[in-house]
Image 1: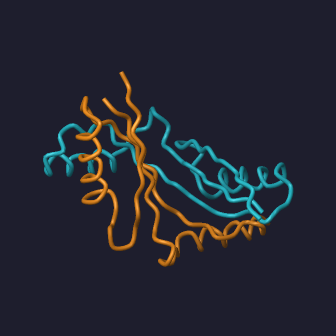
Image 2: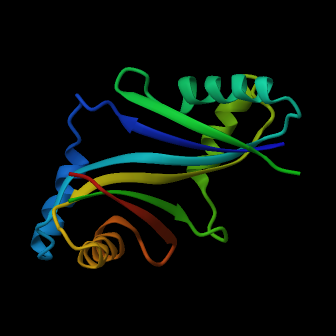
Length: 83
Length: 83
């Protein structure tokens, strides 16, 4: 079994209006040094498979078809074997 | 200046209906080995400060007041100095 952690980010060329909005809130709190906020997703799950290659294939399919939007987002993931 | 990466997760005791929903989609695609999906956030930003302690203070305030919901989420972050 593998524990998987996925990070999904918008491509650098794609604007992030949600990040901009939260950053405005920060400025109102006096946190004026905070800049370039970009909001993505962090997803954890397990893959019940003994074979790392097969698990990676499932993870890639899960990420590209369900978790991320391949038009504007990139994903990266790490697998850690657990007993 | 520091580059900051924040991970925000729901507490383990809090249900994650969005994760459950995406996982049902995975089962429809035949990805039946994927379990325990939990969806959180990954946030990046910069702090324009020369002092690590001061930067950490700003990051804690940003995370606890704007980025996370302290009732049901936990956050962790890392700072990396950049030139």
